[in-house]
Amino acid sequence: KACEPISTRSASPACAMCGLPPPRPPASAAMSFTSAPAFTFFARRSSPTTTSSVPLPSVTAPSTATPSGEERSGYTAGPLGPAFAATEPAVSATVRLRDASGTGRFTIGSGARRYYEGNYLIAERSFFDVFGFPLISGAQENALAAPKSVVLTQSAALKYLGAGDPVGKTLPTEGFGDLAVTGLVGDPPSNSHLQFSMLVSFATIEAIPGWK
Image: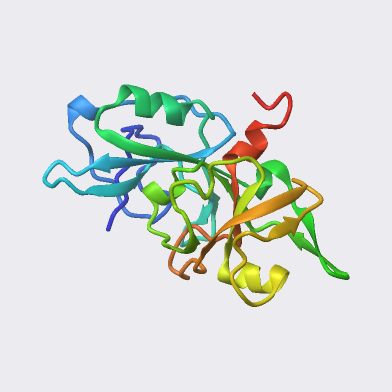
């Protein structure tokens, strides 16, 4: 399926995520925004024909390669997500994501071993409302609610904490301190553009003095 950008910015003739021409939304939905390097922002919009919801990318998309090998990426300013949700009735949920390019890799201590980890996403608590990654363990509604909480994929949980349910355990890091494991999620499928080993709560960076 072609991606449906909410904005009608015409600078890109095709979706940077899938390479297909985006359908043009009705004139009443036309919007444009000035983006700044900060976050990738996704919105979930109610379908005009059903009561269900479908995830839609916003005016940005994660870094991706075109068939010619050209790398493309896009980001939006942090306040856009909450502002969009507050002013657009058709938007039922939004989520802001930030990858390691903004905060850098961190070291994880696991016994006598140390690991560099850079394949993580910092995500708002609404991540599971927008994307269909079902939790294997943990509570979806609050897994990413508190500062210093983290949801691990099955591969990351096994690598860092061993076999068994990791929920309730502590993941020691030298970037964010000790993180409480609040959820376990399956590894992202290979055909997903969102690839991550763990989700660190957005509240973790919001609690950093001077962040806002």
